[in-house]
Image (tube, rainbow over all chains, first blue to last red; front, side, top):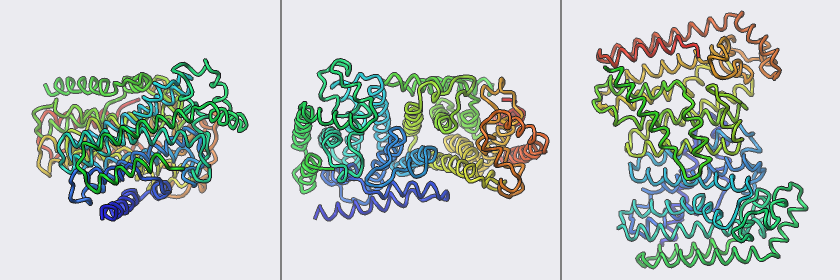
Amino acid sequence: MVNELVQQGMTAVERKLESVVASDIQLLEDASLHIVTSGGKRVRPRVVLLAYLAAGGQDLDSVVPVAAAVEMVHTATLVHDDINDHSLTRRGKVTVHARWGRTFALLTGDYLFTKVYELMAPYGVEPNVMIATACTRLVEGETLQAAAAKSGEMDRETYKQIISLKTASLFEASAILGAWLAGADEKVIQALGDYAYNLGLTFQIVDDILDIIGDPEAMGKPVGLDLTQGRGVLSVAQNGGKNEEDGLTAVAELEEPDPIQQMMAGLRASGAVEIAKMQAQETAVRARKALEFVPDTPARDELFGLIEAVLNRDH
Amino acid sequence: MVNELVQQGMTAVERKLESVVASDIQLLEDASLHIVTSGGKRVRPRVVLLAYLAAGGQDLDSVVPVAAAVEMVHTATLVHDDINDHSLTRRGKVTVHARWGRTFALLTGDYLFTKVYELMAPYGVEPNVMIATACTRLVEGETLQAAAAKSGEMDRETYKQIISLKTASLFEASAILGAWLAGADEKVIQALGDYAYNLGLTFQIVDDILDIIGDPEAMGKPVGLDLTQGRGVLSVAQNGGKNEEDGLTAVAELEEPDPIQQMMAGLRASGAVEIAKMQAQETAVRARKALEFVPDTPARDELFGLIEAVLNRDH
């Protein structure tokens, strides 16, 4: 029943994502639809809908634009990330950057950001403050990541800060928005926010693990990319020091495929992936614990299930 | 008196622009402050403040964040424009792109966009809808411009559509926001919107003229840039046809300075600049006419003065 309701809501989110990017400027609409209809796991909008239901919300349609907005924030940053990473494929399709070129990819990302405004504007003050804060943190996290990769000063503490800012904050905002719009009390809002924050950390750690051990076919994008950029699980292999100390930097800076393959094999052998998996288990435990403060409903069961889905995904 | 009030308001806008970009991520704050404190003509925030006063608003401080927000929209697009244009200088300073590189410039622009949200969120539904719409149009205008420059299909009609979307819409929104927040009636809001829309067209046409005949020293940036990108007054010299028809395209695609100089000399000689100047006079007349529907106050006098300042500026 809840499952069916959420499925209908997610279909409505897809329709909203497609309709909101309509534009007289055909190129902008085409490039936006290209990325918006390319699938994606849609975890963030699902968190909005489930948090809304778990917090007692009765009119799921009323939060569909919010669910679309958080996915749109994520989508906009993907388009801009692909410029900075020179990525050619994403979700098994050519990137906006590769197909339309840098100028139009940059503008398409900006356009998608303006659509976040458009989707959120009707919700008034508090929800807009929440999404603005999450967006700021996301960009701060991306910047910290780029700066750390460039300077080679990526350690566990920095990695934690990066994934908190760039991923967990938007997950947290997704749940808080859903719960707040359901009119939940402060304790439940907080619990759902904690849940989603830790779900976001879990999601990102697993994402970084898949960059090392994932199957490129299943992923729909090349693996090892984060590694070449000095990001991700790389940092997990380090004991709080700088890259220089364990000689990983030099490899991260290389562009040829062979050293990257060696690096990935080295990381797999070093135990870094195992450590990262343990960290993901740890954040998953925190996500489960947070749900104890949420009323026991079928929607809460779905939120529990989402933790397992995020932990066990292979792409 | 009004002049002094507006001056105080503009100083408050500067402080707001500087304080809102504060971040724990030092690079983001540094790059943001670099562009935010680099001067700029601040026409848009001035329009917000003057429209607010002309519409009878009594608490100028209450619209300072809105004035900062419209300038922030403009500033964010400048940072992204400079990436796409490979610009090295802006307002007499090195660009964010040139100093921090493309990745950080892209993220800085995104960061400034998130600060627009933050500034606007407290104003509730209507103002956020207004700014969201203006932002969407702005990005549509930039995209249309880039597409027209690329395809060489820049004619007067397209040029008009571009400057309407990319410049006049944000000017219009600035005035409407100011007037709406002052609680003005619909007729006055509409008149101030019409005024600012035409002021924006005037501003952009003059900007494009200065790209051809301006003094690089006074401008703080190279001239002829729009020309090399197939934009701006170039289109005015054309009679509704494509670039190919009058042989201008080939020149626009060249990168060496000499052909550009020749092109600029050719445009100056062709009368295109004179036609553009007449168009600016025409839109200025429309801006003046719109003010007839606004109560006669010292703030309205300032709005009249702004038209002359925009028309007669040399940088």
